[in-house]
Amino acid sequence: MTSVKLIDTVAHRTEFLPFSPPAISEQEIDAVVETLRSCWITTGPKTRYFERKFSWYVNAPGALAVNSCTGALHIAVASLGLGPGDEVITTPMTFASSVNVIVHEGATPVLVDVEPDTLNIDPARVAEAITPRTRALLPVHYTGHPADMKPLLELARQHDLRIIEDAAHALPAYYEGRMVGTIGDLTAFSFYATKNLTTAEGGMLTGAEDLIEQARVWSLHGMNRDAWKRYDSNGSWYYEIVAPGFKYNMTDIQAAIGLVQLKRLEEMQTRRYAVVRQYNDAFGDMDALQTPTERANVRSAWHLYVLRLNLDKLTIDRNRFIEEMKAHNIGTSVHFIPIHLHPYYRDTFGWKPEDFPIAFREFHRLISLPLHPGLTDEDVADVVAAVKDIVERYRC
Ligand SMILES: *Cc1c(COP(=O)(O)O)cnc(C)c1O
Image 1 (cartoon, rainbow, N blue to C red):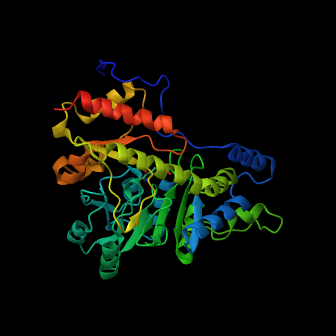
Image 2 (cartoon, rainbow, N blue to C red):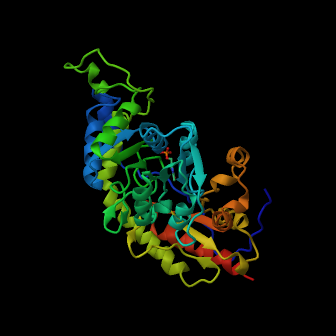
Image 3 (cartoon, rainbow, N blue to C red):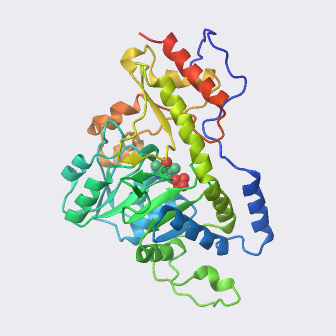
């Protein structure tokens, strides 16, 4: 990596500002210790209670707690019976696991380009990509901004398709007054360390009760009854395997963290929204930058704040911008390297960069700024000052 020479025009932070540290309080720590002292440390009463609390929170009929969003997505694909010969339409602007799980089950991922404002899957292009083999749509609510679900639901109705939503970023998010988690057939949430609610690793699948009970079987070896109860005093040693299921169950240690995080979520979100407003106010009228959109019919969960660089107004590229931010002691990231650029997908499906031109073009100008509840006003001011300093020095 080339070293970056800085002209010292603004004071630099002496301490590195991490991109997205987890917001863990003493309450989560106490809850973990309390769980370790109890006799249930794996899936048990706390996991069931967390599922109930979560389903109330998003207003979904059923919820299944698992050990990751990737696991939740995989269970969704498998339990809906998607497999060889079936096409699943999804977006290139996502994390690898949304597409990997389709491949895991032998189904065929079909990518569709994104809308330029939200970078969510474009329903008009989805309509064009549907074939007689299409069985499901897998939209991703990029950055927490819901995908345009109304036309997708309509297409699903017309063509008898299932909808699996990747809501890893979208807690809590609303689309036309409906909460994400209650819209498609199955919705997968992530509680990974960087997400809006964390259990270190974890995830949740929401949906109709019958689909969730079917998914539950797949989450624990394909056992046909409440297998976690088999070590209880009323439990039985007997079980039957009714599907070649996975081992994706959540532990009570994770659920204990999740229950506290869920209680703290509104307060943590309030801080996120305040930081977003400060960034928007600071960058809104700078012609070298494009701030993220929030359409009028949604409420974004604001998992990420993705700034777009107007590269024709700058003499440096995005990668150099990131290096300059690092030199200012500020951590940033890129969401995402589009799926079709990754070697496995490029080589297996023969996808070329220009096959999804919007995702490809926008990728080169994306930079995710720090956005988490632990940011102080001073931290935000440092990020703003760094961005402004870099833009000023490299304008053309
Ligand atoms: C984080 C993330 C996932 C994976 O979540 P895990 O809980 O780490 O499995 C899936 N999709 C998107 C869009 C993500 O950002």
